[in-house]
Amino acid sequence: MEPAGGGRGGENAGDVMNIPNRRKWLRRFTTSSSPLIVTAIVAPLLGGPVGSVAAIVFGWAARHEPLEVTSPRRRHLALFGMCLGLVFTFVWAAVMAYVAISLERGLRTSRDDAAVESEQSANTAAVPTNPSVSDSKSDEPLPPISKVTTVRREGAVTVVDIGSLVSSLSTELAKERAEAWRVGDVTVVMTTRPGCEPCQRFTEALSDPLMQTALSHVRLVRIDVEVFDEDLPSLKIPTDKLPGFYLLAPDLYPRDGIDGGEWGPDVASNMAPVLGAFVRGKYATRKRSWQPVSDNRIQL
Image (cartoon, rainbow, N blue to C red; front, side, top):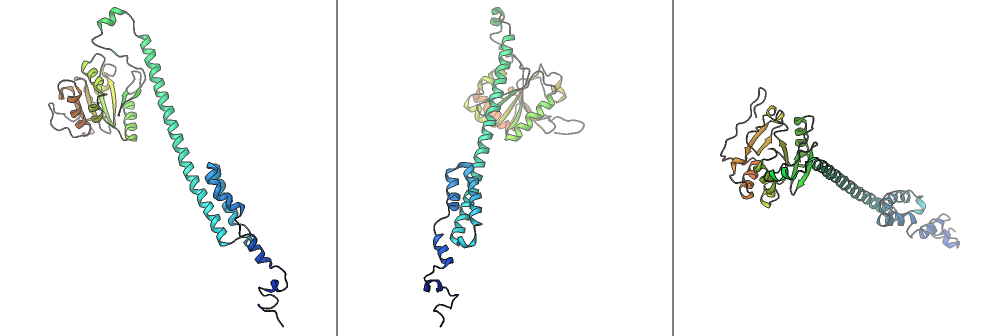
């Protein structure tokens, strides 16, 4: 007579003979969580970037354990550990990339500030200290012209002073225009010279909240008309009325321009509405009409 449950090979044969069935014993033994699975789930939460990568490795290893010691539940847990490690890996990568970019920008700003301070210190040391000369020029401040191009922030405005020793004004303007386009700013060229009182009043008013709002996201590129008296005419940038403000076309010729005669007294309440409308292309009613620059090749 065959034993109940399907003969000698039946599922309960081992129970009848009081011998544990090997497959059932292994299944009962492995119902607890595998160390690989536990590591795959805990590692990304506690181990940082290294733990996130390790979770992927341990989860993969847990899913590829022998079939006789695995179950659908354990395979699902192993897959969960792998996905968790993958998500945390991407998160840590994004965090580290953000920190690296922030540090790089901070270092670049520090280098620019150090270069500006060094240049200003060198120029200040070169200025004569004769008291009589200083007193005679007190009403017309003559700031030293930097030899290299300097960049600084004035609130929401980026102020660029073209250095006196740049090899090519057009090349320098092209660089500044490209940088402004990269960060979403508008390039505005300002013509000036030392001793220009309206230019000085504009600079003093630049920190006013009205001016900050009007020139927000503007890259103000200041050019000395005395230093670049030969370069500016070739770029069709007028130098007769100061300060002048010009928007550049792709060929670096001015596509629009105004000067300080548009607003009367040089105070922020007068300058801000005019400049704000001008840089946004909405300044229509003018005291002095602008004639687009014509060239043999391009009509702006």
